[in-house]
Image (tube, rainbow, N blue to C red):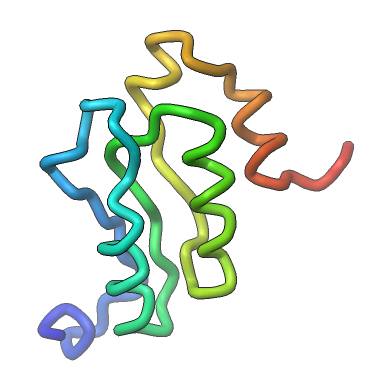
Length: 92
């Protein structure tokens, strides 16, 4: 609420207990933050699979505009191209 009152224009939401674990994002936390603001929300932490990305894509109407992925890409869980396809990038 304080960040909203201070005029935060975008939220990068990282559940530090999930970050780097490859155990999936904290979808409930993301939903909660998105419900509390009309500003864009970026998901971070825990993304491990293309299914995680698909699940986050379902939160776009709620205000989740993107995701930060690191370890899953470095570990070769999927490629950036695959992630973008699942995220719904427009066809070239």
